Image (cartoon, rainbow, N blue to C red):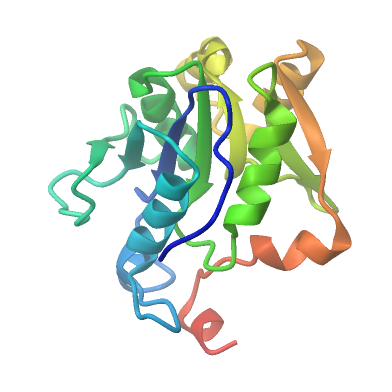
Length: 199
């Protein structure tokens, strides 16, 4: 997959959240084939992120699984069964740069154009999380490493929802919401069950 994109003028890490159990799908979503080229989802997302110009690619994944992405570092959840929050904690802790572009593995329609838009809006000054009709979309976001303090506090207190963490970061001016345009809503369609693959 070759994509023509202008690279951001600030260094950033990029990461794929792929550590979920995929219990509703019945198999690991990271290896579901995409069309038309049949690439596994994990390879598609890695290609998107590489072509945006990151020099630090991470995968939040399950221990003992080879994701087949040779230039990525795989990090594992520090706290089990906490949903994506623990994966984001591991990613932010391991990232080499102050800004981290995070995407979920199970978003087959997310595009390089949209991710570039997020990075451009971030501009190396503030984090950015898309905001849509259902609230924040925390699994396509540019996070500043400084939110680790909020993430660690939530994990230690058994609070695993990302929404209040993001709201606190917005209040602190660490993150800005980016309204999702109606034409962009389909980018956030994810694959959760076998029925989704037939849709």
